Image 1 (cartoon, one colour):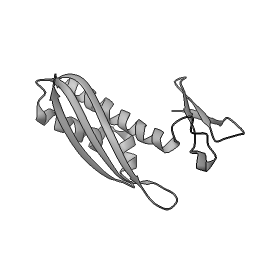
Image 2 (cartoon, helix red, strand yellow):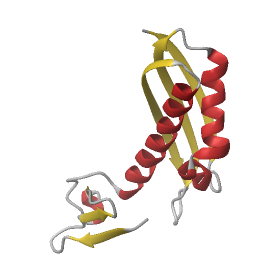
Image 3 (tube, one colour):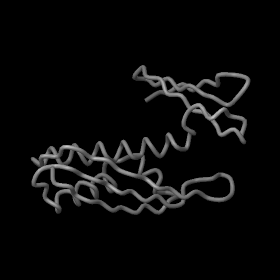
Length: 140
């Protein structure tokens, strides 16, 4: 995997990442840190990537288990250390899984498998943060 990140230059703290798969992603800093607030902060991107990684796993696992999953979202609420480096110290993941006749035991299992076996992003973040998981199932 390869990513190149380039600073857009003065004035500001905007960066553009170009991924190995050919996609671009913009990031910026807060105004009080020299940025212009034009794009997500780098740590927001880390958190977003973690959410996408685990939601991807959950949908894939449920589909492989024959579940009629129609929608899946995960809300992440993160606390960070007060001093540098401001790593994540606690992340709450709340999944909302929508489908038809979803088996609660399979939804539980999919979430656990994601975090215990498949999601590389949450595996890395678990080294500094307490990870807490909740979910709800909504019938479609």
